[in-house]
Amino acid sequence: QTYLSTKQVKDLYIYVGQKVIEAKPTLTEIDSAIGDGDHGIGMEVGFNKAIQQLNEIEVEDINTIYKEIGKAMISNMGGASGVLFGTFFVASVKNKPVIDRLTLATFAHLVQSGLEGVQARGKAKVGDKTMIDALAPAVDALNTAVEQNKDLVEALQVACEQAELGLEQTKQLVAKFGRAKSLGERAIGHQDAGATTISIMFKSIFDYVSN
Ligand code: ADP
Ligand code: MG
Ligand code: MG
Image 1 (spheres, helix red, strand yellow):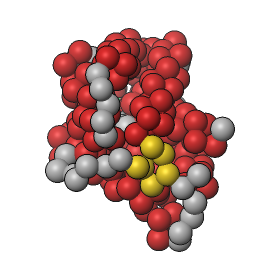
Image 2 (image 1 turned 180 degrees about the vertical axis):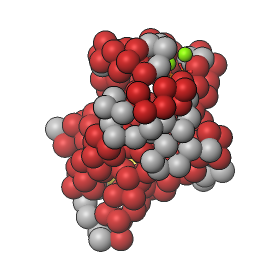
Image 3 (image 1 turned 45 degrees about the horizontal axis):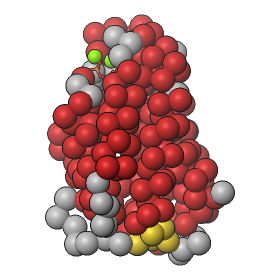
């Protein structure tokens, strides 16, 4: 498979949403250790609204899918991650021409724009113990895969591995943003909640496309 159709991308994000929702207990536990414990609830609310919306509207192109997911998150989730995950999806397709098939190159381009949007909004960089620590390495992996002419599934596998590696590395970091910032060194040993969600998203994208 070299690309996903609009219909497949819609199904993909419904699947991704379900997987993130299933991980609610894990996300709650992680955010309880070094945050306020609401990250799992927030992601559940956001993806439930997004899924509901995707099922209600006529999805004509891939741009609409990303935009609707982002809007659902921004309007319903609350918290830092409502804005940041919402911005990720909205920024992915902002000022893009109509996309009706998702190739690896297009996906890499969208995720790159999404990352830039989150960084413009939240100011966090790699090493600050946020979602960026999982997202940025996944984006790098996708861009490298495009340059190397890798196929979609292979590229998603590497992106997924890099996101997970980035997530693992958050355990060793002190937080520069978010609620864990006030904990200083006490955050060491705990992984970041938002980076966990990013890793779950990439893993479920890989699962969906490889099955
Ligand atoms: P809140 O902290 O408002 O309760 P959540 O618990 O839903 O929001 O989300 C926390 C996650 O948001 C963190 O684990 C981190 O990954 C992410 N985050 C917080 N601030 C930033 C930021 N400035 N840039 C990127 N990600 C951030
Ligand atoms: Mg929280
Ligand atoms: Mg909160």
